[in-house]
Amino acid sequence: MLNEAFVYFEETKNDDPRGAHLPPLLVTALANHPRGTDRGRQKVFRFRKNGHLYNLLKKVKLAAGPDVTFVTFHTFCHTWATWMRRYGGLDTRGLVGTRRWKDMKSAARYEHVDVSVESMKADLLPTPKRKGNKFPG
Image (cartoon, rainbow, N blue to C red; front, side, top):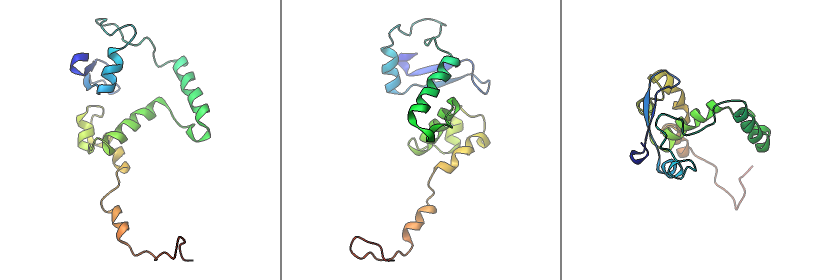
């Protein structure tokens, strides 16, 4: 339902069907899809998670250099969770509320991405005074 910025997934990783919100950027991209999106129960995208898609990801990793070799398609799920916490302001309960994770334990894996208020207290520690543009020592 593009006009409602909504998509429904009958099959998911955790076997629970769920709806998902489509951000405005994605709604616009889908509205301009070259083959349209009105296909009833047919898939909007012809590709599947297969060898060709893995080869494309492999090319991207090679172009990015040796520091990006660990990236897999599952990494994008972790990125989404991290961004939803950091930029979307969701806590662990909020991540579970998206229905991407079934329980608090699964979603709690992303708690480490937040800078805690306690860790920011490091800004209050005494630091040496600077002389000119150089640190003493």
